[in-house]
Image (cartoon, rainbow, N blue to C red; front, side):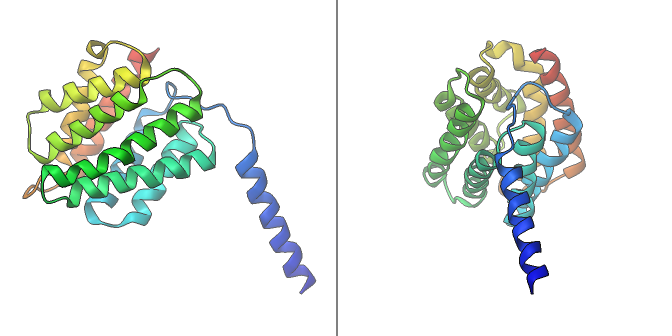
Length: 205
């Protein structure tokens, strides 16, 4: 019994150390291929309505690739997962608007976590707009323009700097099958995301 209690206490201590260990949050250094794999898993989870695997992928994305604290990673994961689920299940554009506050909260938490100036609210509005366009099967260029505007707010660079990477990201969004009646091509999603993040990393250097 004492051995079990010691084990539990050690486990709690290890969890506390992991949660409180100092981190250096960042948005500009990441492994493009790993980010692509994690984001693909997150979208797969959202598309299938399987919240656990998608949520775990989002958590790992913000915890491991962007160096955010576990608390911030959990908050961002919860809100982005809810936003994606609403985007996927909403019957019309009006109902889709319910996803916007969750995008705003998620990007606001990113702004707080990295502690740097950014236009989180406009970035969230543009990200929501991009996903709404995706469900309407809008052209890649139109979706990409919205993504470029979102990244401009996050990274404090002109939207034109992100045109190429944002268009790859738009290709991935369209391949996700979020538009009604469309099917997903997850291999294409991951490939396009890898290209998007590779180009994004080069832009942010």
